[in-house]
Length: 416
Image 1 (cartoon, rainbow, N blue to C red):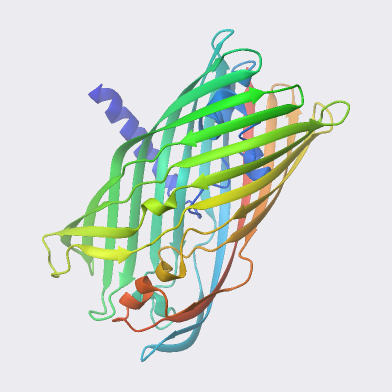
Image 2 (cartoon, one colour):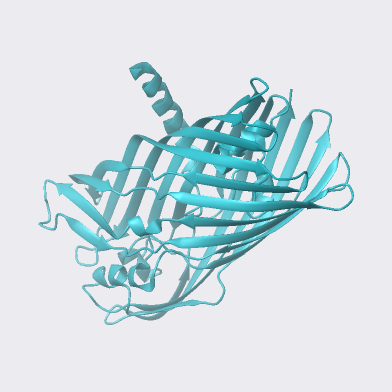
């Protein structure tokens, strides 16, 4: 058992070298089909990525299939009129993150008439943002100039077909989580850096899929809370000063969807989904320093995150056995209130539009997708953020923020 856990940890560590480059807090869909449909796939999941979207969807696997792909994401955050009394007045700057890469891998197969199995590797949570570290260019560097937060998971799953209409499924996710932040201390004028890792954690996914008629289906998925115990080092100007520990769990989710097939040939699929996320578990960020070098442990940062419900609509039009067209829309409200917005969590409400296509030739299917997320109107902070104000000796920070995220996905599937 210990050897198995060591192998899983090693694989997750190797994978996270790339997967840590996630440019969002929540996924834009695992697999290009889900990305193109705005993640509205719980009632019509692809078997290869059903371990995440809905484990019961493994029951739709008609033959063994292997899929691999990447999602590239390019965030663009603009900050204007950044004002801190006695420090800066009306500064304008933007992030320097660039294009980030998130791979995904999935496999599914029927085992018997009733059972199907699969496994998927993916990043269910992720965020990575960079800013200029020079406070003269980016006064926000006194709060943060690089931050990341992510989990990589391997999820083996099993589905059972109760009858021709109803299937259930379950998967266990073995994960590795890490987070980090770097900033210039406003008083000491030197860089502070914290990097923390939880090498191994566990969660589970449950799902049910009900095919009411040959046109209508319902899907329901539960993704459990993940207990995360992060540990790492605090470095000041490159030298280690203390050990840091942080308990900051990944939230649970409930996703439900309704899918309906239109047309005489039932070749137009329309699905609507809702995804509830319990972000409210993260009320505050408590960091323990050992030894308490600066006399500030525990360091408590208020978060006051709020539970959210995302709504998505996806469409899939199968033109012929070779070509399929897709589209989607996702409304994604931010869990981060004005009171805790900072450069570690520069999030906002987002409208996301997506398009995609699938091309099947023989045993191969190539799925492509593009999605564009936009914050509806600039976010305005006028001294409310406790997290920002604390970085400047409780001086009130005001700013305007706007942003977009461009995602491009490609997934190649081989059916054996």
